[in-house]
Length: 268
Image 1 (cartoon, rainbow, N blue to C red):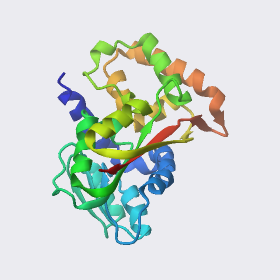
Image 2 (cartoon, rainbow, N blue to C red):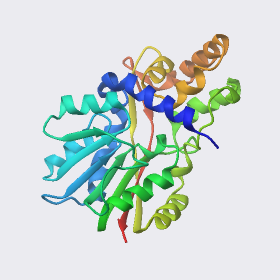
Image 3 (cartoon, helix red, strand yellow):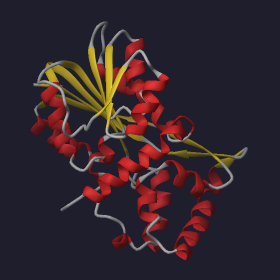
Image 4 (cartoon, one colour):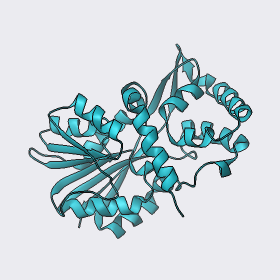
């Protein structure tokens, strides 16, 4: 199936949100970085690729641990933000599914909530293996699906009742990587061994008054669906989402469980 329109929407969506990422999506994604780095087992002068770097937080954290880090992202806006925030680190526009690096040059490839947004995660894994030295580590994080995430269950239970999904561009299953057994199989096929996983209990801290409006402004996958719906349908979804989220609102801030899973493997 052709996912090119979805891919373009993801790239453009993240570019347009790059300037607000720090006070929006990062409220949840940064919480997984300590576990990501723990699995990476970095040491001084480790050569690290932050693959799908966004504003560069993983590369910056790796550098603080003594690594020689660099980052790439397919969103020009995100790369511009990374360069502005961390000018001492090299960042470039590139694709995790087609890395512009030679074989076997990195000790670690790290991806924080990146494969969730690509069209071919198996290819991204293969590319990570290609650029890693034998014995190097690939570590990535992924959101858990609606069956284990209060945040995504709240959203997609309501969206499923009202949205016409046929209006959205064809997209890969966003939660195929939430299944550990499936991921371990994919990683083995890509050339990784000693695969492990660890749950991270992320909590999304979202300012009020409307959780729906917050998520529409900071996410990309959900807006790619809802922007295609009639205004009347969006209004119904907005009302139901905000009503369902109200129980998480404390002092004008929503605190909604949004757990993730971190996977790691060693290049064989």
